[in-house]
Amino acid sequence: MSVVDSPELLTASWLSQALEAEVASVSWKRVGSGQIGACYRLELTGGPGVPGSLIAKLPAEDEGSRAFLGPAYRTEVSFYRDLAHTVAARVPVCHHSAISEDGTVFTLLLEDAFPAVQGDQLAGCSPDQAFGAVVNLAGLHGPRWCDPTLLDLPWLGTVGEEDAATLGEVFAPAVEIFVDRFAAELSGEDKRTLRETAEHVAAWVLGRSERFGPVHGDYRPDNLLFSPGDGERVIAVDWQTLSLGHPVRDLSFFLGTGLLPEDRAAREHDLVAAYHEALQAYGVADYSLRECFDDYRFAAVQGPLITVLGCAYGTPTERGDRMFLAMAARSCAMIRELGTLDLI
Image (cartoon, rainbow, N blue to C red; front, side, top):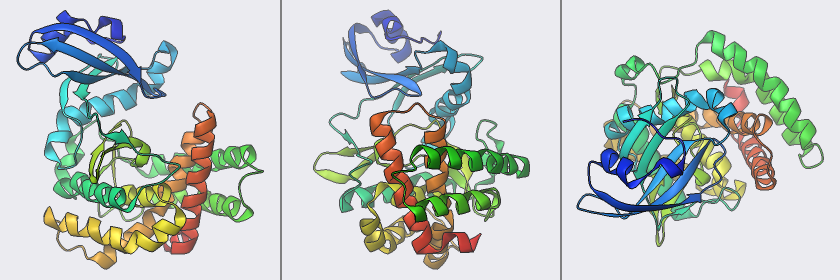
């Protein structure tokens, strides 16, 4: 089947072929902010096998940006095709996936998780939500922990020495862009922490490579869906930034940016322990809780790294600015409190 890049092309006929079931009618409406792509909720009627609703993910409406975003599109489609069924993390069921040869156009038909609701990055997670999120995260990491066959997936990016050097060259000016842009809002100690992190990031990204697995890369409340009345039931979405690296980066990023600093400090030992216990249930052996917490401290650089790059090279929005500022302040506080830079 051909891929489609606009909701008008998601006709009953096209969907019938994609779902291999007879779709009688379809209507759609835009959902989400759509910074990297566009999402639509489809309401369907039809015969057996036709879900009442689906989420369609399509490429960005701006065709000029699609070539730049192509690697992210290919990563997400490949995750649902090649990896999702091999891990235990709760993710949307994928009913159909397709991508163009050049990777600039893709179509995903995903389970509609309604009435689950998106987390709120600014408000932070409740205790139940945080617990559910870290246990779900272990379901991504545990089943493929240090699995050498992951290296055979050509689309799953890894970082070598040349990439690390490039990251260091890119991140330092991005920090200055971030600091200049928010000079009035950032504290002096946060500015220092960001600049000190930039000095260490090239060495950090290559560190502790003996442990590896699939890394979501942007595991935070805005990319998680929580079931009403059951915060522990979590669905992880947005897999465009998946890569191969130290799995605990996801854990540090989530706790460091998705919880208020006082909540993170009060709960992090229990939450790291819950993640570690879940890893053990998936067969991860010879990895103590002490080692896990030490890796958690080391991995805290993921917070400012993703925050600064996302802000410096993304499209500014009012909520986005508030979110990036909160994430930077939270992750810088975490780095200082845990002595992260002393471990690199």
